[in-house]
Length: 339
Ligand code: SF4
Image (cartoon, rainbow, N blue to C red; front, top):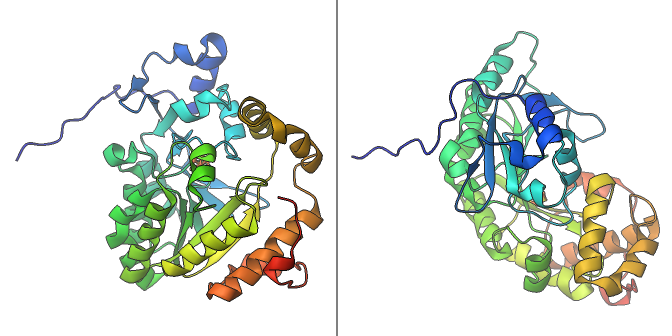
């Protein structure tokens, strides 16, 4: 049987992310002469990472793992856009078109998991970049990371918009038998118009929901995050109800939600995009997003509406979403938020 050739090998000495930042600072993204341009028009730059598991603060988990940086899915609201600025790359086009590939990730991860100081804490996979990038089909960094975590019997949660997660069902089922293993499929809306405008590079929402169905049927704890709800695009009662009904119809074990927040590079990118594509929305957004978060009252209304719809369609909320006190439960028809 013919073996699948290595599509590109940039040699053994890969630059670190710091090297990349220095190179881009001096010559822009064009200075990444080793980066390969693929059929999807993204450029892939292999890098060497010094650590695989990243400690984080202020999140519901303490450790993250991200095999790639930058995301070809290119969602306009993506909070991770601002992280690309750390590499001197911009949060606009370069976030979706220059992808850093941590070529040695699995070897580093394996070493870290074997350290006596590692206590087997929960690891959140794919928090800063979707770990099922199209290029994952070639590198298999996410799959091989899950294999390493499985060998270590280490609890994990995976967040993704990629139906490719179904490829790794065998590992996830095995993992589910021995420790915590949760897949959070991100499906902010099933509305085709909102989806195609907000998430130009992602798989169709129903395809993602079918992936949830396959994982649940196989015995994996898989649910949906309606993150983020984007005011004016996916926040109407009708769109929320259609989305929650579709989530229920696909057997999701839970459904969480959050209203979009905007900060730093993400805010700049989103507002530029809005000015270009939906100028009439700009004044309203300027009012709604004076700060990082939309006003409490607005978020409470949206979450209250979602809770009612979840109950109506028999979808369990995610516990952390219901920890926060939210608005009294109105009938959906009575909620009056303008967007
Ligand atoms: S799929 Fe996730 S990481 Fe990728 S652009 Fe969209 S929100 Fe960001």
